[in-house]
Image 1 (tube, rainbow, N blue to C red):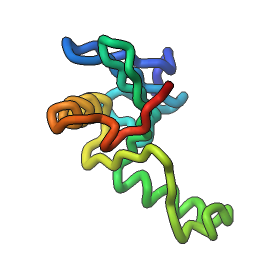
Image 2 (spheres, rainbow, N blue to C red):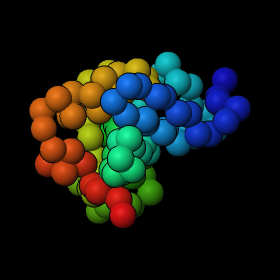
Image 3 (cartoon, one colour):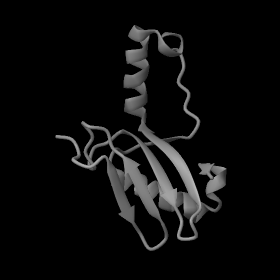
Length: 111
């Protein structure tokens, strides 16, 4: 069963993260979700989180629809590929990106 509210916010002492869940997504198992990282000073970045399995499913679907040369390539400007599904795994990735330094090195900055 999907989420009742498409916007799922997670607040941590270091940042807030907002996930835009689809109608059939659950917080525990989402594999393809747009998200926003927001720092306390108001700076924001976007990310499209996807698992490898989800990318494979999308490319397989495109083979039939003809999108992206019949699924021969995949492109997404702010893609962050994750090994594990679920919002918590993605929150952990946001925290790791901050631990490693400047989010501008990985994420797309929002104005």
